[in-house]
Image 1: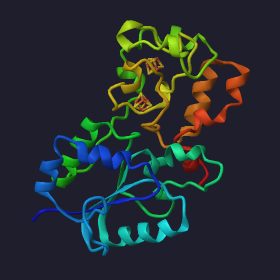
Image 2 (image 1 turned 90 degrees about the vertical axis):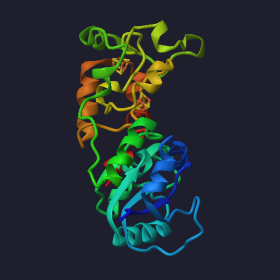
Image 3 (image 1 turned 180 degrees about the vertical axis):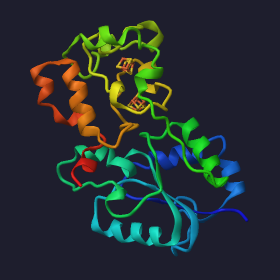
Image 4 (image 1 turned 45 degrees about the vertical axis):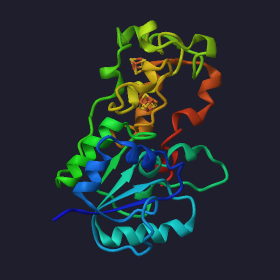
Length: 252
Ligand code: SF4
Ligand code: SF4
């Protein structure tokens, strides 16, 4: 029997669901599953029993908690689709809303991280889910597969003075093989889970941590990382960058 699927969206930009429906394997996904609730493409309001629920977006309003709990009640397995659902996401930087990841309110069976999740990773995970296998995420940090890795000890020796290259300094990864840290630019690759195939790095930008931490405790990862680099005074006070995607998770 085909697995029954629910896909819902909470507070989000819909980027994860847009990525999902743009996947090469999406037609295959539709073929091999029975989608019973997916407001993006189906006009069905009722939530019924399902095998797998994918939840995109974070909780920013009380009204979303009821929907989330309703989905949990009807789903054998619930997965957080994307960084907002898993950690709070980019909306963490909002001062006006009380953002929470979905695991604050329900038990989840796994996360599919990324802002949005990388297509290859998402495609592989969807196939695993419909074959009744669990999700697998790398336990390594991004630096371990980064093309700019070079000598990590030397990279960590540098003084970090900015969070991004100046616009005229942005060059594709293969045109400057120096690690961002070596260039004095903060890169969160040392504390971020690999799996995105170094997407930003290859485009000439440092990692901002959208894949989340490898270990559950991002705070101690950050402290350890910062103790290894020499950070300018300005950056020491710029807490947004370190918790850009995950601060709500820490506030539980
Ligand atoms: S710190 Fe960033 S640029 Fe340097 S090796 Fe790690 S991921 Fe690559
Ligand atoms: S390089 Fe970092 S911020 Fe960019 S997609 Fe990968 S994990 Fe996310």
